[in-house]
Image 1 (cartoon, rainbow, N blue to C red):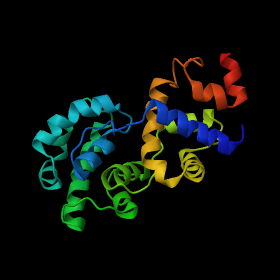
Image 2 (image 1 turned 120 degrees about the horizontal axis):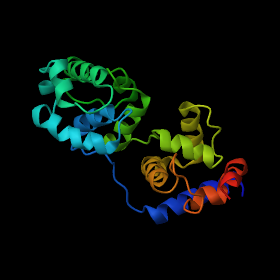
Image 3 (image 1 turned 135 degrees about the vertical axis):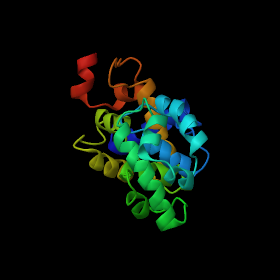
Image 4 (image 1 turned 120 degrees about the vertical axis):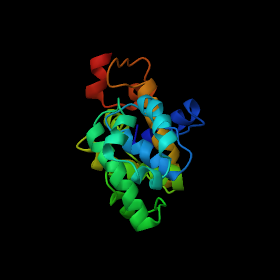
Length: 214
């Protein structure tokens, strides 16, 4: 299979399995999405969805969040990893949104990444899911599968993102990155991997990896 044929196979297979996808993190506006994504670092989406209703009941906008002390936020997000850092970042991020953007989440990569606790991946998720701007956020699932499918060298997430954007049509990025994440969780996990379940890896995956499971 040529690389373009592999790309077509990935797109067609994922579209059959996941014709409709929606973000895994519960939210209702750009700010609640931004907070949820910021909290999701080194934490499962399931855990974030358990915690955010508690947090958003108290502070669901930057003005309310900025009025809390980091210690209060930490109490509200207890159970999520890196609570010390995240609680401080959420309070500072809220104040930055007020000072710089009148409390409105900006629809700009540069302005988002200038906020406390917001890296490129978080900004990409917000741009894609809140503002429908083409982006390709790379999480551990996408990074793993792009390597398994021999579509990237696995060197780092930055390279994986570049390869994904180069190979896949721009108009599919926002949906496709979610499809790959769901596929990775269900059919091609990091642990408990079973080649017979993973039709994409079995069909187009790098031979050095696939042969270990056949």
